[in-house]
Image (tube, rainbow, N blue to C red; front, side, top):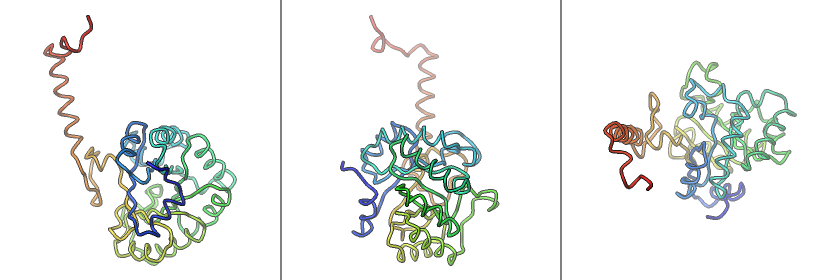
Length: 262
């Protein structure tokens, strides 16, 4: 599989090719997803919820993001690996923001960072790109602002969405995640931008899509969002397999002779 670079990622939109992304948090899954032919992997701060079992993404630290990103980059050396900058990334000052993003690239071998952003954060995006750090912006629903929003809600201010998205492109972002916004609004944003849009709960009019890998595999943790399509039911299968194992151990059927050394 040829290396997916930032320019190659952007070129896919120009050729009218849809972009397939998934989240990944470890070496083994990243390796499997690269073998499947994904265009990019996001090491999301969603790991706070789906890996650490926390209520939201806010407790995730920069060190934790780097730890997981390094494993993903090693498992998927040909994919575009993008890493979330954790809360409160864009509010720590420009110098520290650049230093934090640089640490991600230097210590994980990822190619880009992602920043939850609006038009008000254009200077932060510009500073990162000026420092040679590729940025994937993120408009619409901002999970890091869950307390300010009062929960995870569809973002219906279409005018502001367009303002924010255009500002991200102008600031130098190479791509833009659109999360939980009306499909028609996401389609219009995608039409007006020259950079790729990656949707999650944003309809089919985006230039690409992303899902959390646990959602894709059917390993649910609580309520399943409307925008999720589970392509398997691995959660149920894992429980069933583990139950069979426990039964074999308790009944003395495992290990058998074929699993034993002489």
